[in-house]
Image 1 (cartoon, one colour):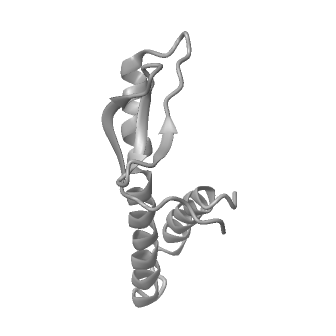
Image 2: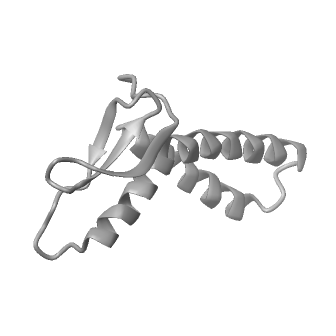
Amino acid sequence: MTEFTKGPWIYRGTLDLNEQPMVEAESSELIAVGCHECVKQIEELRENGHRIAAAPDMYEDLKGVLTAFEDAYILANHNHHDATLRLVGGIEAAIAKAEGKA
């Protein structure tokens, strides 16, 4: 897997020269810019910046949740098998998408 820029990613409310919201690494390295579209309101672009900035934290937390579920599943002697498999499958799919494998 190719490495991605480690978090935290931060949306400071900063706009680039074209007044587009920017998400940066803690080192001020540019991560993403919310590009203008005629139909997008600046407030929506700013909200998207917050979600993009949260991505590394959510990714790490989701990996931790998956480990906890897998451990709990083993300890619970496979009770609630179908529901657990669906939840774990969804988490695995989200992690694979974040890693570019889906």
